[in-house]
Image (cartoon, rainbow, N blue to C red; front, side):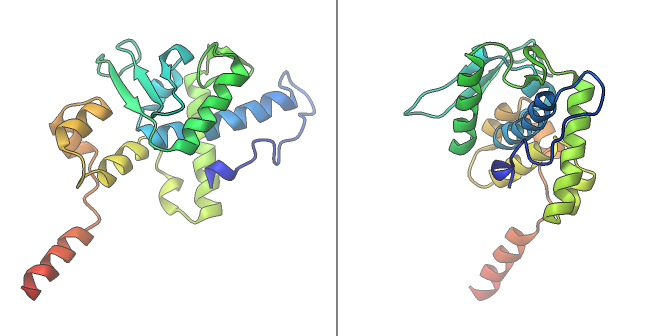
Length: 200
């Protein structure tokens, strides 16, 4: 759904104020791409907003990675994180080319060489999530915010990626990973295992 959204759809020229129609479209593009970036990397919003193009590694025959520097990382530990969807990696490539590889990956809508104000970014994300909650009937997004992608990715990878690797990917230790980033509300695996035991 996010990949299909047109940032210009529904945007109109403001009747007054300093923001132009182009600024509104750029803000909409920012919030969509920020959400895609977080959903496919598990980056915190502050980490995603702090990324410059110098920290993005792109290759035509390999995965795209982002380097979270100690200065941007909440835990002050550097890490290298893959973008887990090639469509999002392609979108990043398009942003990179449009920006000439300069500035922030998700910079200020009016000037991508400057960081996007944290409060403005969080408000734009909240508005998008409420919009998606209504249009896609995803009740969780009425209240959940960008940390939801960390829990989602961690839980999706639970059975296939060792905990120590998942914890390193998300930039915290295993205990925090277990208690704060693993969704245990889906009991499907337990039910399936119980059925196998009964049939044996």
